[in-house]
Image (cartoon, rainbow, N blue to C red; front, top):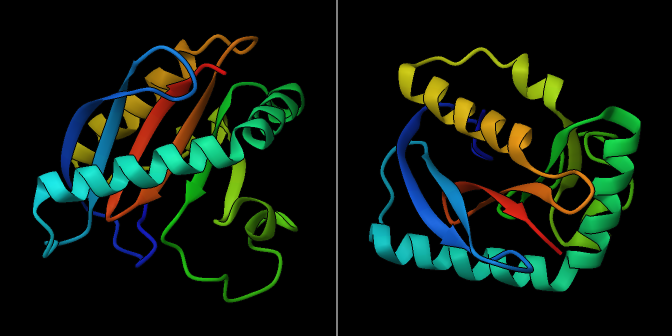
Length: 160
């Protein structure tokens, strides 16, 4: 798993309560790459604010994307990078994703996460947490969102 800046080292892991659309769930937040000039609590709050705004704004589209992805590819998660720069080449993100979602957003099948080769014990544990959420969600009622913003990457089970 790499940050938008291309750094692949996981610096810290934080658990937080997440609301998604419905009842609070446990959300996993992963801090990526080097040191941040932002206070960790401020960084967490900024991530939460951006995540909640994204879910509120794009919830219906995410629900449809998740269901279609599940039908085509099986279990997986929606990945949204709210801090990414535009892709260097055409075709690196689904057509129209940036215009529709405001951030590169795509459904990633569980198998793709399983192919990742962690570079550290911490990265292995964090990837395990993501895979656990992908295994745990009820595909007929919930979906998983992996959201990157403010130097954090979080995994949440969302119930519309």
